[in-house]
Image 1 (cartoon, rainbow, N blue to C red):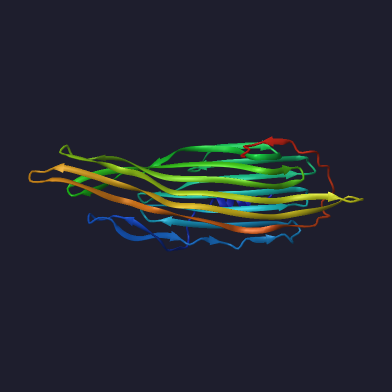
Image 2 (cartoon, one colour; image 1 turned 60 degrees about the horizontal axis):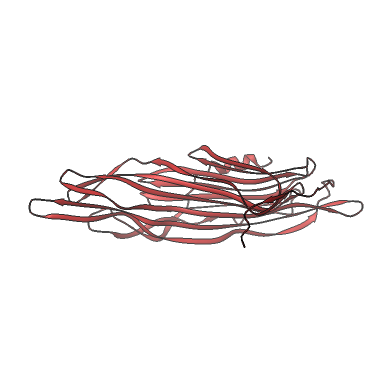
Length: 336
């Protein structure tokens, strides 16, 4: 693959850089009840995209990232896309996502996910690939030979617990409530459209979900303590790359042209749910009962295009004409 060095370098980038004040969150660090405080929200850092359609090897690419949450709970991502053709008659469409999760102040690179298509006219080959890494370990992969994917074809689907954080103790009045947090992740990758020896005109899609679930909550023998609401969605991201990197041939004598473009869109839902603690105790002169909210967000969502480069076609005489047999038909999920 022509871009492995770039892809490897991107995968090493941790999500989260430029921070700014953003959406409101409710957290409690005292027993006076929930207080409104700023969630640290990373400004979307995105290059305007690289338009290399006029290059000897035409391509378009993009890189973007964002972080959000606070020192107790949060998440972040970086996303990359690439669509292009090469003078050896090959084509690539590629998108990747790297995501971090923070729970009780511990931040880890939770997920790295890649989905891409590679084709070669002279070699008469076309393939699609998908990989999901959790905490740096490969947990799911899927491949398929190319063709016309009629309807959504799923390459991977995965979900599992990622890690348990260290425990923290919160006091509600004089009742200690000790809790830990389990971070969970899920991902899926799919495509539809054309991936064949003449190149790519297809949607490459993937989604990722990260959440935190509290556990524990044991108090002394004279008290009852635990977790009342325990789910907190840290990030729900869906990315779609409409990749065009396709050769066209015709005329007598035969000549070659190439169409290259790409639209990379993102839907992102961040920080929704809450984690509440409760405690009750029978004291000598008083029966005590109270709740303690350690994290709560109403959640907010965003949907936007990272890049939008319409496909343009230009002569590409450096690639000799090659045969293009009929593409095999690959049945996906047909809706309607």
